[in-house]
Image 1 (cartoon, one colour):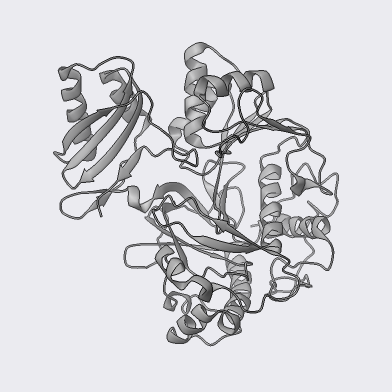
Image 2: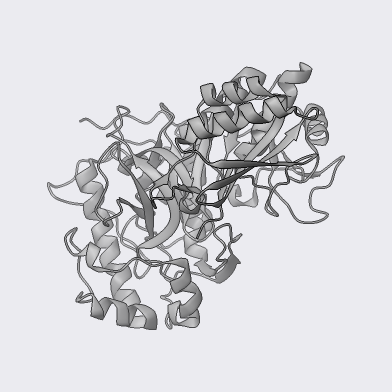
Length: 487
């Protein structure tokens, strides 16, 4: 397939972005030389932050059109450098790679890779300092630590380098360019959850989207509001701010859209809804279009890994960000899933040498997709299904995904005046249905809901009810429709 010319709006401002790639020798992977030890692809020049990000963006504009086989060869080259570094400087991996029979250095073949055991959150907790490098190469910059939200019940500490952050910023800009966002527009963000962060009624304001764009793009203003403000407060704030773009969790977006629809409220300038941090369901996408006429654009990332996948600019599925992370989707036997199959997501960030995460089982499930008609060679994830621990467990031990279609939700809401719902599996036989309702439900309505649950999930579960004025979000401002508490 021929590489497409770039349609990025930044190309006119910077001829290095959007320039067609020069013809390369057969079998070559990258003609660019890197100035940073341990980083072969994408190459990092010997310049400052802004110039480095710009150079990486220029490469990303080319590599997205590479065939899948060429992308994997480049990944293998980078993985060889990462493994050699981990073997030499990280005690945990020195032992693990020797046990796997892998010699350090060189490329790592597809056949060799599965010999490395998966890395779990429990492994990270138990390894502690043994997972940290004893010798960070020059050019990788300062090291910062972060702590995950612990949504799996196992919070972890991870280290990230300044260089890793530069790749993160380059991929953030790729997302903006893919979806042709106007950098001069106004960005509203509802994502901070700390006490006294972005308080109502004014929130906070910044003259630009982020300091990450300094020296790269001039942007419009950004405004922020706390996730724990009420829906009424958030809508009031959005009406006053009148943004071009809104970034928030899918659950918050759905509540906002449904409130706007119920009260005839429009956000006339809103062009796109940007979602992250949770599963972006078809209901979220439909609600955004119905309420605001704005498409929902999702991104898939974790704090410890970085970007895993970004939504295709031409379709609603996702492209793995293969230049930064190797993503495997594995079945229950550890074999790669074929298109149409669902499996666990295993990630290996390619450029974080401070604390390598090699074959890290992040606890999510996803469906593999066919190659994309858009022409990009980046692997495709058709759907992100969410956390493994939120799968329901039948008495037989079989697990099932309790996802709801739009028709399922419509049937549920036709039974009773439900404002919010959450399904909590307490045991293999018991589901608690947590509800926020407009009025008390009758015994007949509760019986109808029990029948709905049993029919939907295909098992005669016992169903109990809990009623709440509002079902709370997590401390990080997220929400889960389904929670499985069965070990």
